Length: 254
Length: 183
Image (cartoon, rainbow over all chains, first blue to last red; front, side, top):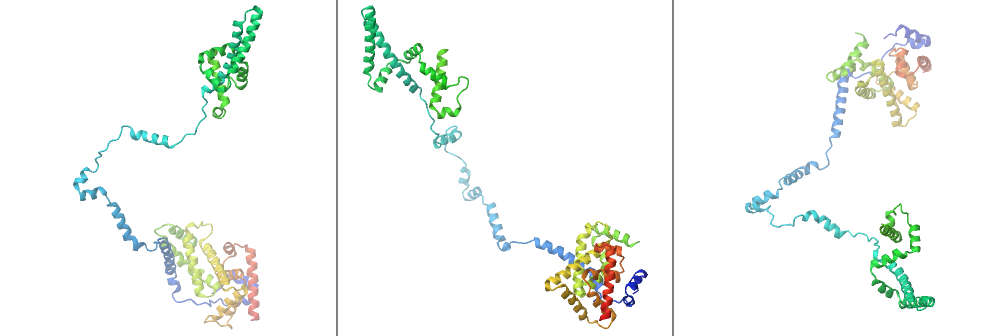
């Protein structure tokens, strides 16, 4: 084995000793190694590829032992047909099995859900402001005014002298109204007396006399342009009350 | 047809599924000896060289499809072979939990264990001297001395400048000379 000229000169310049050593291959190789090397490498490559495939094809433990049982149970399910079973047992029963003898009211199932839900779900109690309660308040006011009117009227009727009669009547009406008013010892007696009055009588009286205090309350508590919020209807009885008063007032003015 | 033309044709055939195996066999037969000796001179033992060589070609089989041909085929093959050698030697070092010097002694011992070993013969002394070199310097010397590889190609394989490679070869030759003179 000889160096190329360039490399030979280079080595000679570095080390003449090395340049003088014959380039011999001291290593030995098994006979025929290179002849079969490519076959061995290709075999390895193919084995690696095959191993990769095999590694992926794993089977759970006990798979094949249980396979037949699993397949048979699935077959049974497929062939588990109750209708066919009945047909085999009793053709007569099989012929009448789907006839329904019981009747159901028309629309029964359509309404059933709502009926049940209505019984099951308890709705929350909402505040109910009774109109009559409001009238009761008015009745108290009407009673007080009426008593005063009756008393004054009595005074005017029973007083003889023009001035003295008037004054006497006034005195008498005042006293009689006071006397009349003194008859009512409690709320129940007042209620009973007012209950004898009709709603129309009360309304007419109120239209004539009015109630400055109530009017003041109405105008101060409500905004005629804006309705109260929905939550206020439910939470604030006073707000609902006041709003209803406003509606009544508008209705009476019309 | 030039070597490069042959390699281009082999690469083309390798990328065709029908001719992939035959092209690979052709590449194997073309480069197996050169690459074997390159590896053998690094790892010394034949069985070790065989393992490294086969692992190297399995990697070639897997990677040749994506070979960008920005370098010549044999440059690419040499690079893979060199890296496989260095990886093997590193693994041997870790497996034996030995230092670099001990590793070199290990290779020296393998040389001495060869049935044909003769310490008086210059060629065996040369080999013993080569084993005294650091791994990369050993590769540089072997590629230049045994394979007569141009520095330009060596630069592409080892990813080192030509100047550094020249310097490395120079120092390697001097060290081996000194070893032989002193042995």
